[in-house]
Image (cartoon, rainbow, N blue to C red; front, side, top):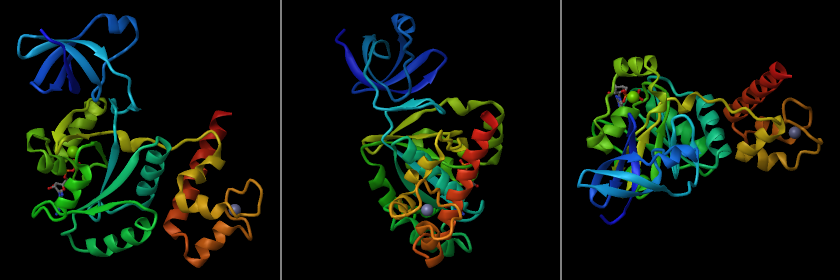
Length: 294
Ligand SMILES: Nc1nc2c(ncn2[C@@H]2O[C@H](COP(=O)(O)OP(=O)(O)O)[C@@H](O)[C@H]2O)c(=O)[nH]1
Ligand SMILES: [Mg+2]
Ligand SMILES: [Zn+2]
């Protein structure tokens, strides 16, 4: 039969499920990949040799544009950071850490803020918007039950591969299931607890959505941003890098030095205190990590 191109959207027990123009085919990989050290991954563009209408053999894996190792997924276009405005309470440190992480890996990040309907949510939303919109981040405030904010979110996900990430309880599974009902994603704390227990953090599935795909990514948010050189951290904080360029202290980490332009900007309010606090906390984590290693 004529070779067929497609994309791996799921991998289970040695089978790769490849989304093609003829539907989803369950495929095995040719043994030759193992010899060459290539493991097909979810997200890979592949060429398959169809065997009947439902199955096939993967003959070729196309070059990848990027990879995430936990969960294992490749050719990702953007990361959707999911945070709840309340319940669990929003952590500015987590937002900043995840933004730094996506910047470090060269991914575009967008921010979904769930549970807009809960008391106190609007105050938090105002603060988040004030801090992150001037930095150029796109924010999608949403409420699941009436699908408030969903048309903007759908537009932002159209035609690309988006990986959802965020801590447990923020509403990722509910969101995924609402956007892509065929995902059958389970929500609720029970499933989250059992997921953690079973180390399913490396398995991942992409769901076709609006000419693109979305995937949940348990585990991704647990990374730390650890850099060999602490001076590189400011590159991951847009406004600290911009203002820090005019700091007159050579090699300044903008930690607490008198007369440092970054410290001054925080005092004047042109850099948000919470952003600066996150920067300093991450800086200390990097220093401690280095101290433990050498
Ligand atoms: N009030 C409210 N609850 C929500 C919203 N989105 C999700 N939830 C609830 O938050 C809880 C956790 O959701 P889940 O999708 O399991 O979160 P996950 O751990 O990130 O996958 C569930 O009880 C959801 O019904 C929302 O917009 N508003
Ligand atoms: Mg979940
Ligand atoms: Zn400085």
